Image (cartoon, rainbow, N blue to C red; front, side, top):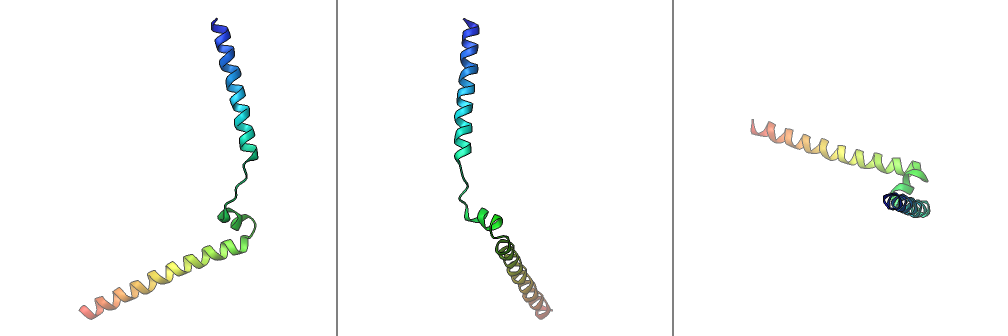
Length: 74
């Protein structure tokens, strides 16, 4: 009796594992961001670089403004 229960559990695990493998094999990523870095590498990295430069410029000019305010208070 215990052996038949064990065999049933093992066969059920194998069956559900096959279903999961079939589901995974048919899944295809449709992300635009993923496609940007796999198919259009130049534009992906150029976009990241432009975002970094924009953030750096904003921070640089903000720090310059804060320094001017500190100099005016002295």
